[in-house]
Length: 278
Length: 287
Image (cartoon, each protein chain N blue to C red):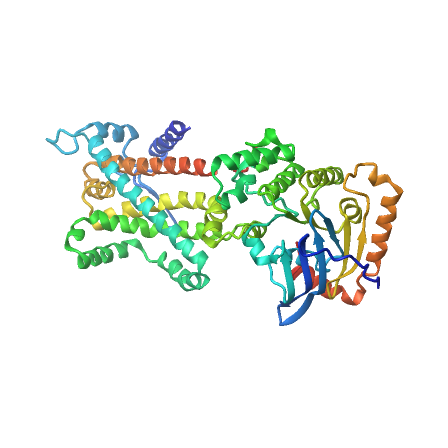
């Protein structure tokens, strides 16, 4: 299915290049149609062939190798952010489910926190890190992880909290009749009952972690990541337009691998659950 | 109002449940106090099968939950196996089954049955042996590895009963366990329950609002009435424990059904009480 979708996108791209106005189009004085010039929209085959050419003149490594390495780097950072964000979100949800007061005190701040743009937050975190430890500040990827966590924990915390409260009252009464404590009830009943809420939250969290990491790589200038490549190649776009899109391919591959991974986690979590009849 | 039928009080050593002078007051929204139960005395002998019957809001589910120590009485005391209900709950002296089977959908049938054993800290081999035993008892051996949602409602209810009996409790507390089943399945399940109780000698407290069900199952039918919730009659059903489909068609059976019906008639709520009945049904006794 995926190759088909890819071919379709490429076909639409080329079709627009063919019929679209070279200098773009305006509607009521507003510029709405993108330019279809080779500079603005290089041919798909140029992007692909650019992958095999050297990244910079005189460098033996092809663009493919460089972008793949950058993507692999960002993937590991995003994975770390996703894992840490999930752990943090679940932990927070457990605390909030246990203590209603904490939930009521914390929830407004959690919601507000998500309205702060991460572009603003990046430099702030970096300077906070520098304040905490000079060694940490030189590792800009740590800040990228923190920003990924910042975006990823939120859907997990909300989904888990909702799920922990979704246990059926009769089931809770049953655990009561077994004289089971809060911890036992959490492990045997509340967590399993929360799984259908946690699984979709993880999908959102994975996407958020990728966005957080790539965006912070751009805004913080993390040297190795694919976000940085998009930024750097973008500056070369006027002379080498196809190159920018090779980095975009890398970022797309990153998102794709992440979503495949999370889909696998989802399937594993939801196995043996009531199935919808197809 | 019907006179309370005198019942011989069993001695403390044989009684499984002793409810003495128990009252329960619920505070509903707005500070109104509702007498859910007033001055209830009920003594249930070991191996006895007791049905609690009455209209909605008569406190029959409340009484069951008091015995289970899921709620505490406002006055009076509840003893189970001669000890306070709280201690009995900690010792897991009873098993419970509700109208909804309440099986955990993420656990296979056998692992659902093993849940109470797991909480008691049994090791895996012991648990497996017991769940196999229980599955045989409810005749679901070949469904051990199935997930609950793959079973019919009646089968799920049998699994719930197997779970309630898994730790071999002396006492089984059931709250309209067959209420959601169709008539045929329901009658089949009643027969199964009687067979299981005859095999295991378990004491049962069974809440229902079906008169034939109460009469068919019980050694004693406890008739309750609402506002305030109290016991208004106790009717012994001396059919012995081996009852079959013919019992349902026997003249004595119909005579007992009529007796219980007449006892219930005195408890029928007047229209003035309808509002309070709604409040009770929503707020307190809505299971």
